[in-house]
Amino acid sequence: MLPSVRLKCNREGFSVSKVLAVIPARYGSTRFPGKPLALIKGVPMILRVYQGASRLKGVDRVIVATDDERIRRVVEEDGGTAIMTSRAHRTGTSRVAEAASSYRYGIVLNVQGDEPILPKAGIERLIDVMRSDPGIRMGTLASASTDQRDHESRDVVKVVCGQDGNALYFSRSPLPSGPGGFLKHIGVYAYRRAFLLRFERLKRGALEKRESLEQLRALENGVPIRVVTCSTRGIGVDRPSDIKRVEKRLRRG
Image (cartoon, rainbow, N blue to C red; front, side, top):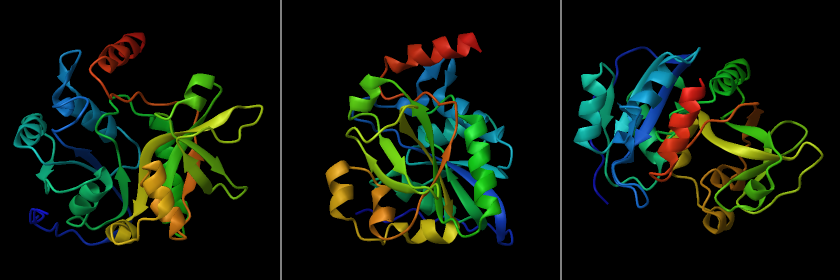
């Protein structure tokens, strides 16, 4: 394992309610190398994500956490903030945690670097929920769907919740659904800073390994995850062909 890049600690005083949005962005991708720099209507995708996160109500600061100088340079040349993190991170959450350790913000938002169209209203509601209930250590988003192909697809993560609004389980397999369909997980997370910084030390359980879903580590270690539902979903980019879908959505406005 390579050592983490040492980051200069931010000197601001700690604030329980301040929100730091971190966008993890690595250059290497099995299905789409260089994905953060892919152009969407002439603009690098990482800049579209950064600009979208900067417009979120309730976010106090946005940074990109990357392992590649090309990504850092593109962000900084546009006036944004990017920091270099270790190339050894296996997950985006680990990269976000390294970046967040240098900022004294009580709530950390993990915004995926391949979501150029963010579910703005849902994320803002998630921030409100985290601020209003200090007992929530981790939260995420989901939206109702009736798409049967998505329900059966292992590429689409499903979630079921209890009456308290907390997740009971996440799975790539079909989960029980009702008349309104099933809940499709949206990969945006909010964490208490203290919990995020110890997340990597939690034991990986059998369910996380079987499903390849990192959020199950919290559930297997007895940490509830609050699920905030929203009506709009972002569009993720996994393959080069997804760029056209995003551009089509942007043309519709």
